Length: 88
Image (cartoon, rainbow, N blue to C red; front, side, top):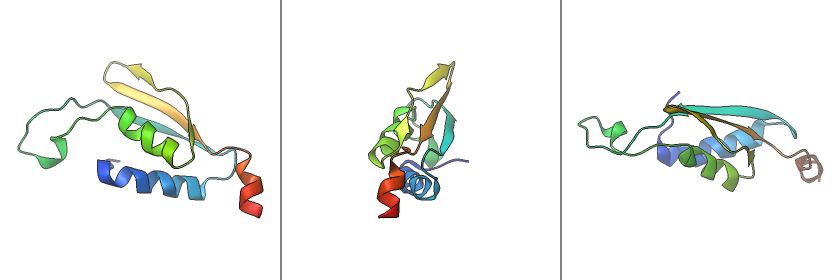
């Protein structure tokens, strides 16, 4: 599913909200180099940092991305200690 760059932080906040402490999900996408194109959604660069940074800013732990050609993937998880802050 394509997630526009301005919406990624909100997506990560929602992932953090719905994950149980210790829960995890995978980030997977392709790297898109910056280029000029008549289609607006491709007029930006996209790489693992564009997902990892907002995920970490929202409190998720994120493994360093693994790259295979133009594809990257990473595991994001909600810290097990979040259980104590949620129950208070």
